[in-house]
Every structure is written in C-alpha cells, then in structure tokens.
Picture 1 (cartoon, rainbow, N blue to C red):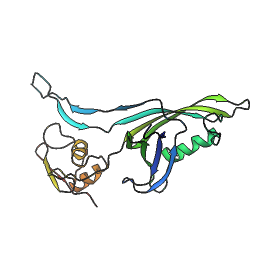
Picture 2: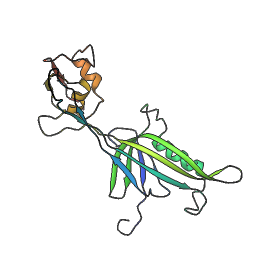
Picture 3: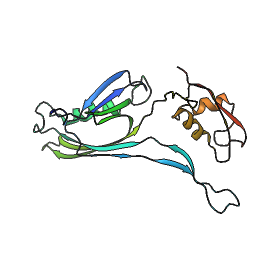
Picture 4: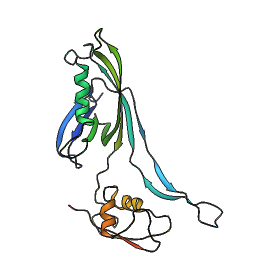
Length: 219
C-alpha cells in the first residue's frame, strides 16, 4: 500500500537499453506474496606455484537476480473483466518473453511496484503451472514463476575510471579479458570491441606485462 492506494506490480517492456522507448506493459492480476533477490561476488582463487596459500583476488560483482511467483485467476473472483487466462499469459509473454524483431531479442524490462521496486532487467526463465480447469479443459488458474537478471546500463563515472576515457591496463598473472572489460565498462557487451581494438588473437590468453587499451564508448 502507498498513500492508501493499492499498487499493482507492473512489468514494462522497452526496445532499447536506455529504457526510453516503451513498447508495452503488463499489470499483475495479483501481487506476488513475496520475492527473492540474489547477489554474487566472484573471486580468483588461483594459487601461485610454490606458494603455500591461495590468494583471493576480487574479479567482479555480478548482476543481481530477482524471482517471484505470479498467481493468475480467471474465474471472475479477482476481476470480472479479466477472465481469459490464455490471453493473460499471452500478454505477459508478449512484454517479457517474446522475441522483438526490431532488437533481435526479447525486450528490456522494468519491474515497477510502487516506490519499493524499480528494477531494470531481462527475463531469464518463465514457468507456467496450470492448477484449475473448466470441464472442457480450459485453464482457469495458473502459477507463473519468473526469474529476472539485472540489466546494468553502461554509464560514465566522474573519475579516472569512467568508460568515457581511454584506459590503459598492464596485464598481470590471473587477469582475464572478460573481467577487465567488465571492470571498465560495467558490461560484457564490449568484449569483442576491445579485442579488435587491441588486435588480440585470443580472448582467453593474455601475456603478462602486455598493455590493453580500453577505448571510450560511442555516444
């Protein structure tokens, strides 16, 4: 509840990674009873030859994940104007799951639930469990489990680590190109761009002491 008014969870679809071009939205019939969020941090635990203990080197903080269960009820008890369960599931899929030909992928999403949640993400899985049927087999109720992964828009920071500046890093033992790219841009999207810019023959093997340049992002 917010200001005495029930706020329904809404899933909004966008066709661009800046979340400026809205293409549709789906409002939940019933709010989820709960939702879970997970966070992960990756470390490099490789042990140097001849050393007694392994050092733990921070690699990256991965995008968070959010999951919850939505209840669909087309019996007319919840909403007399929303009694077509197949149509309701299709509307959710159109926003969150279906392939958008203009961007060659499903939509970018925002989960919005009052002031407590504004979550930029992509759908990673969706499972529909039908639980009640008419005598002719038409489904009336379903539980839909959905999983989302946070989408981080590359943005410029106001310091020397901003991806809007050209960076130079010297490779040390244990460095991986995907990790270095993510550290600079907060995204894996530019891995191939960096490899091409530096004329690298391999994405997996970097020579210790070599220099890797990270060009500014295109505006």
